[in-house]
Image 1 (tube, chains in turn red, cyan):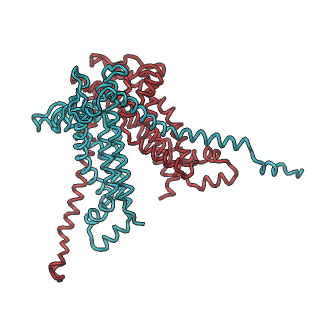
Image 2 (tube, rainbow over the protein chains, first blue to last red):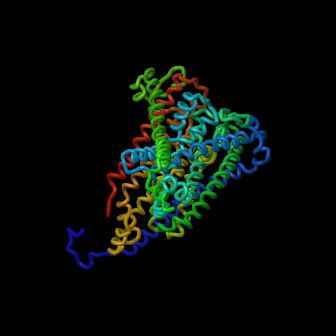
Image 3 (cartoon, rainbow over the protein chains, first blue to last red):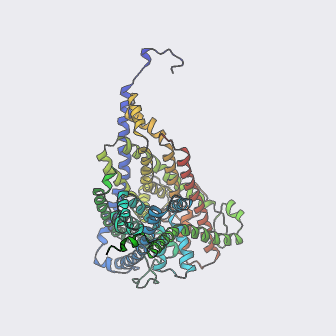
Length: 300
Length: 307
């Protein structure tokens, strides 16, 4: 504008009014867009609760699936979820934590370290259904585990491994290096330092990361559908090689049926699943706040 | 008594201890390579079955035909109906998630008081913690009947409600990554703009947003990749019809829904329809992998460095 007209005092128009209105309007738009997202969440939870809660009773929690909605329950799904998750964590926690310790405490800056690191962040972006295809070829077919709890648990363990590694690395990074220096200066070896001083400090953070990883695995459906976790399982799995079903698959199964009663059953299953997740995440948040009270505070 | 045995021990190398340390380091390294082995396993298993698939089906047909009927008696293997369905649902999702997520991020990062922010941010993250099967249920049982009141021709299964719900689901992905990008813009830039008399809105839109562009673009690409790989919402709500269309009101079949459909059926191991899910899976893997790589590349090459 200044090219065409000489700069006179009247040319400067602060236009304060308009500019302030824009800011105020944006705050409105911002609040609305957050409320849209959160409103959807609230609506989802309320709707599911209204449909599902009347169906949740002792019979629902202690029965197997059935062709009749009144007799159907989630016993097999709960047992399958609990069994599979126990094995998933038993495999992924030690491997994930050890991998993180290697990357954070042992590896020197080298091509190997950055290769492993980049690889882990890429794995986190692989769609979960691809892990299902991996589990199908490696565990179900090649290792001949069949469509078992074990195959499902190992597939899930690989799926959550990147989450655990990244969370553990973050927890280790938050441990002040003065603690390592002090321990090493007193003659402890590297592994003794990590075992006796670094890990205890990082423990709440590692636990939080693992709970979040587990809550991701509990809700995952696609990889288990792909490895062929059964949708009708009238028994609780006893051995790692038994066939199984899990809560999200049971919900998927009921949602896919045309009858409205089964949709209400699916809603009841969702209520149970959300309650489990809520409990786990509350524990994780409590732990995180406790960490925030001790070592993390130093950084701020 | 002053034989100095402790001195002797102090300066002698403790072979047992060194060996133990080395062993521990070795075991840790092995654990760290599990991730690499997983990647290798994914690539090898996908590649192996996909190569077998292309021994039977021509790769030209796969990449050019617009008809996908591998489970019918007259089999055709054109991937395009699955790709357009995936693109359609992902585009709807991103069209919802980007405005909502970006505006939320600007609001949280530049406008909201710290107290409000510390409450709203975790609340938004809850959206990302809800299992995808729950969103699928919501799309099919709640959103579709609701939309049918306004769109008479909307079928029970359609990409519109699947895409809308998927969009809400990935809002936290866009908002938290964009917010990270914005909060890493140096405070001095904001202060300089305020010093020149800018309002808060001008600082946000003309200083912070341009400076954070690379991170925001990366978050959008990641959101697209996430939507393309998302399975349960589309498998439940978008339908099982491999139609070559961009009409959001009719049933379609995404790449992921196809894999689910075949997995639910009784497909004999090694049969042609068993192999198709790997060909489709490879296509999906390559597409999402490329998007993730591009997103990392954008961050690295277009980042504004102010130090």
